[in-house]
Each structure stands twice: as C-alpha cells, then as structure tokens.
Length: 197
Image 1 (cartoon, rainbow, N blue to C red):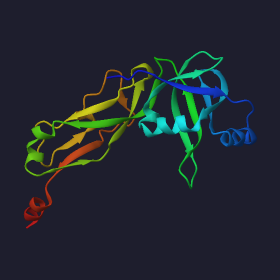
Image 2: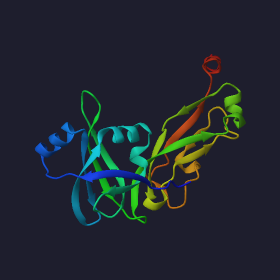
Image 3: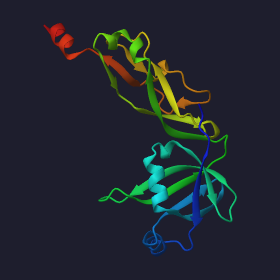
Image 4: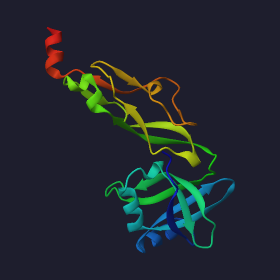
C-alpha cells in the first residue's frame, strides 16, 4: 500500500533573493528550496512545465519524492508548500523538506470508500456524505500510504463513520486526538421529509 519514492528532477539555482528568483522565472523555471535534516538549505530551479505536470497528477503534497540534483546525492523529500500567484493560481515557489525513511511526518492522506453495493443504507436510497475526503495522519516517511480505505459493507442509513472505525496502516495515527467524523450515510430527502411529519 505504501508508495515508492518517485524521482523528481531539479537543478541548483545560483544566487538567492528576489533578483535570482525573478531571473529563474524568466527562464521558464520555478524557484524552490530544500531544507532540513541538519544540512544547509539548497536553492533549486524546477522546470515550470515539468512541475505543472507533476502537480496535475495529484497528491503532490502527499508524495515521497527522490530529489535528483546534478552534483548532489539523491535525497528523499516531501513538499511542504507550493506558493501560487494570487491571480493566475500558477506555482511561483516550492518548499521541500529532507527526510529519512524512519522520520515521522504529518501528511493529508486520501480516503477511499469501497463496497457501496454492500451497504443496505445506500441500496435503500441513502446518500454517502463525505465530511473529510482527506485526513491528516502522522506517518513514517518510508511507508506513506497511498490512501486509507473505508469499507461501507453493512452500513445503514444514519450510520456515522469516525476515524477510529477505519483501520489505519501500521505506524500511522491521526494528528487530531478526538474521534472525528469522516463520513455518514444520510437518509434520502423523501424519507427524511416523511419522518418529520
């Protein structure tokens, strides 16, 4: 279930500050920085189209990446933020955090719902109301789950699915201590109206 670290290619950016960042953008790059793990930060350039393609693939902020920079040894990183242009909503800067495979990190993990056809509540016309399509979990960097799975088998109208009801991968735990709601099976509007009468 854990994902492999995907290769991510970048180049060292010479110079720092606004001038160098603007120059990088003029040349079709997005400035970035990689920091953490007790080492000095390294300024990077990422090809704009390459970054955009990776962002469009989805779950970029939840992926373990194998950062490849010429002249540097490969290092595992997670993206800690993508700054975007407020008008165009296009990436203008990226922050990466260096990590070890045994590091504990907090990431938003996608929630997948399965066995809709085995839910009596959904068969009777109930609606699956997803409260959280992603949940923030503390996970081991070398074992980041692709998703967590909610089994809807046997779920009736009115059933509420809490985080504690979902089997989490080994080593993963929610970052919020309380037993929050992830989804519920709501009554169909016609049934709800007749019940009110």
